[in-house]
Image 1 (spheres, one colour):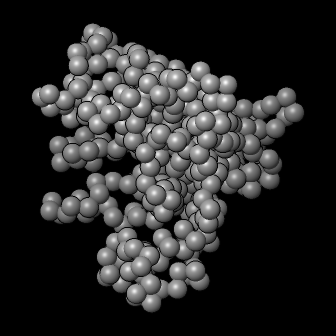
Image 2: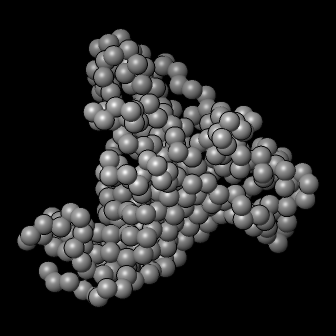
Image 3: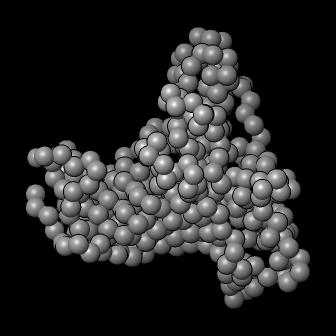
Length: 334
């Protein structure tokens, strides 16, 4: 496959009602309009990647369809685990010790990067509301990138997610809506974007948790507005085309011509037994803490004597993290 485009990276704007529709449209747009060039995973005889700067604006991120029938996911347990990693930092202890060069654990976790910043943002929101009854500030933002950790050569795969931004807008009834914006360095559109979005928005992600927490804190309704996702590089790896992705993309283009497009792509996000998944993950974490290893299977946990149906999990897994209720730790400012 030949290169397409020149030295100029194209910018693409996608607007969609739901996450599944946004993923669908972004896949096709990147395929049709993205520049075709080598990427870090390029090898001889493997197709060039499709790449573009892409913004995806999802107007109703809580509504179905959320998961797309053609998107690749982990199983339900894996998805719930990923969501809890982002929202509640359940695997922050998997981050490697920077003083140990032989440590092979993760170079970072998103939650560990931003969680300490949230009490400061909440304090600013609370102050603005108390003094001005206004939430229109553009200062409710937090960052992920740490130059001293991420710019060094030893960080072979620095964070893709770079920043989160909370923007409140008032409707005609005088009620506030939280629009949530995330900015990303680099994304795998085919296999990562939609799963990333599950941790950021939907009924389980940060977007809804921020709205719920701020609503509780200010004692006013805060509605979930648009989810806006920006990627400096949203790409489809060339090797996927060696695995037959082009045929799937052509089918997706045909789907858009159907009258019942939304029904065709419909796949529910909402887990059949959300609480059971959380109990299973909590049991896995408990087994890990006792030295049995990570992510033991349900069968292995039962052999160890775990009664998963009656195993408890932290109560804040059903709401925002308990750390968001704490006062800002000003020692972090030093």
